[in-house]
Figure 1 (cartoon, rainbow, N blue to C red):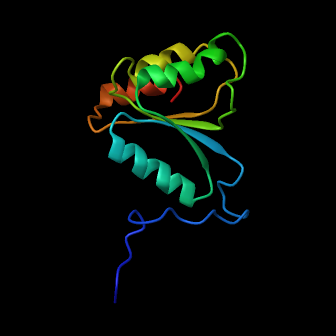
Figure 2 (tube, rainbow, N blue to C red):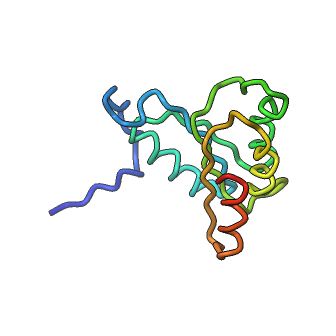
Length: 126
């Protein structure tokens, strides 16, 4: 038996149109380069188009149009964001977006999850 590491070498071929992520765009915000690459690669393998942000400022920059009621330059169907990032945390960006009526679903990820963090994220709409 041999194992194949899907994260080494050339990127995977484009997914077939019947993949469940086909046609959907996800914004991934993560300051750790390796984790961001892993998330993006996994989503791409499932057919999602991925937009990447390296920190909270890039995430906020991308989402600024939403704060004024406009769509961002490229529509996103979902956001996956780390909580702890430089410039702005994922939680701070989520708090700002909580007042926006039409926004995509937001999934917050963290290596430091506590019940109070979970409760705050849920109260803000994550």
